[in-house]
Image 1: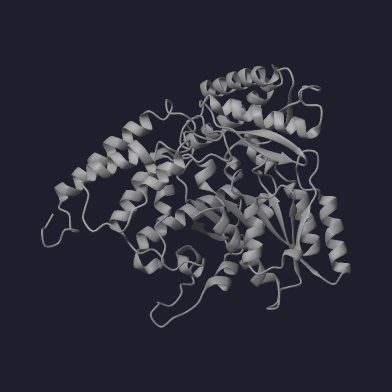
Image 2: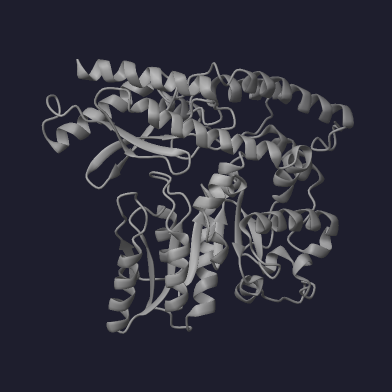
Length: 476
């Protein structure tokens, strides 16, 4: 390191930094299975202790690594560990971390294809692979995003620009009562009045009821409104439910609705035979959201939006400026800045491309098939525990259950909900797994979502052991 230019590191200095970091990273990753599934106690005190003013002088790198790995990282949910069965787990493949190190180190600009054509093509390849998985035609296109929320916002604005006039305030959007909250947020951010958002009832399997969609569309037309978009879920967060995509697509076609499929959690199960069957009809959607940081096991911050008509993305997002080159006409070499809100953006494609190129798609398919099987087995094992009711059978790799003893200490619905909150806390207190709850109607239920590539049969057996012990503890 030059005394005059301290930010310019020599090759040896860079190597030492990376080696020191890797020593701590490998120790952390190697011990994920032994770390508690949750360790957030005292987190607020820790956060307050780390608050500090702008540093004027430097701190040695080893001390900073100590702060991160000995204090900040451990006091958190172990989202990368095998016991994290909450929400929709993210994987955190190390291959993608290496890809980010490469991408951030070379620091090439990828907002315009011409600025780094080779890297632009690598990202275009990733989008094309996703199109192939979904079954989209060659004229489709897409972008890589930070995740489902930005993808949903981009999709809704694109649909609005394509299907509604400049004054779009009569446009109505439809989805089930199980849809992810990011869709409501996206609609509000896209400018739609809250009164134009229709939350429709779901059926006994927590799927959007097509008859309710039909009735709502007809009623809104009678009121002089403009039915314009329907969202179908390809795997809900609450229960992993997959809406009847083919039926919804037919309804959308007849009524002239833009069909958007939220496949953020479940979309990549298309790699499996069971997933293809469940998700049949996704290829008919006008837009599809996928989150590689969920069911492709990549680190958080990796999302994707696909649109059947790539031209719709360009018509919505393309703008010009004297300092920008002219837009390209070739859909395979399009500028990402013409397809999304971002001009400056990270090279996200490499974190997807590198692990897929290193391993091929086969191991990802095998992992997803295992998660489907583990969820099915967990549901069957739960049914052997006296008093346990499986409220939502797994359609993908998520299920929901509750303890329903049919008498004291749960005589009323609210008593039963309190009992199940106690049960969930008792399960989590053992710190081998971390489960979360949700409400299905007025019922509080406990969720299991199996999605980490590090979660295998041994951890699911621990989960069932802890559930059995917790049931005995709260029922005594």
